[in-house]
Length: 456
Ligand SMILES: Cc1ncc(COP(=O)(O)O)c(C=O)c1O
Image 1: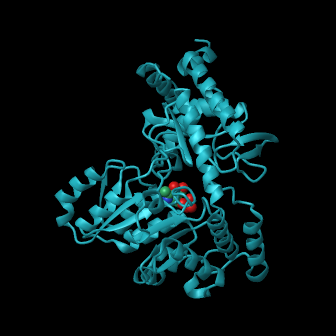
Image 2: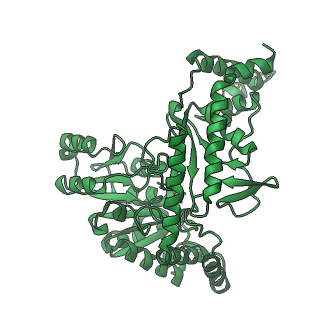
Image 3: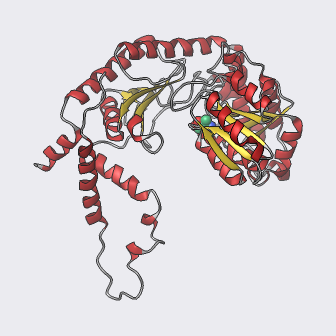
């Protein structure tokens, strides 16, 4: 499928048109007394927050061409392979429930049982309020899964990266991370005060160059990569990163948030996918909110590291312990995942079917492996939002990923697959995407639609 042919100046015209409209909408009457700066000149005005204007600009552009807001839609049911929004049934590709475990009787039953005994809250930090058996059981199960000494779970996956990286590194240290690494890793690095150096996506040779040139300048070094990258659906060559971390004396941390339940024959994660021993990785990080259909994050590693985090890391020591039903749900989901590898096989079949059909239709799926995450890269943000809107109207819920989450020219729709999608559903979805994208590319450009609406 050919890429968009919209002229560059079309976007600029749209941006300037919307900016003017916004400027007028934002204009406020001048105050009678001008001793204090007008409200909208004050840096204390929330509208002056960095990024807010761009947000308004995007929203206004979408409003002007009659697009619905694709974000924050309210689902009226459990959102898995299907969902219901505003009373309408939709095929759903916006759920991390990769193995269909959210709402599984064993998972919901474990959560209910934990509520009956412990209530819904751990009530305070575990260091203050004490442990609940479910915390320890989940941590033992995760440590056994990655064959590490120990594990600690925290209440949020994002906070897990921020807290752990912030606690492990400090100013004389350095963090090397993939250019597409998750925001939580970058935020943790910033908190730590360590120097941050990124290398080209999935490129061990680029990391090696960086290590050769700069490793000697720093004391401790941490390399961070992901299992399955959540924007592109591809995976790194773990063995190559293990070799580099050994040669340059670094720790290696894998954020396996999207790898658990997805990568490898049994869904064990990146190590299984790459045929590498899990113990070759120093720190395994992951989240409970995806395959494990709960909420929270984990760090698995040597017992000294886990003891250190449990006693000193701010996001653990000064934050509430995981809610007992959420710990119980994650533990039960891990057991189902391990006992039923056929779910992983179904997910793989679904992903491969989607990818093969998308390629057949000439859609741009980037470097996706065709597992749990498959992007359809369409070009600019407005085009991605428009396509998502048109698909929504045809019964398909899929989110656009737009700048700044990805570079502007690689805005996309991101399809999350689950083991519960059906072959017919997938075939119909891909055909509909191809049809709507083709109509979008051959129809009036967005700027032309906008001008038509204005009667220009
Ligand atoms: C790679 C990665 N790490 C960490 C997180 C944060 O996890 P959570 O959403 O469970 O807080 C995400 C969230 O999607 C992620 O994709």
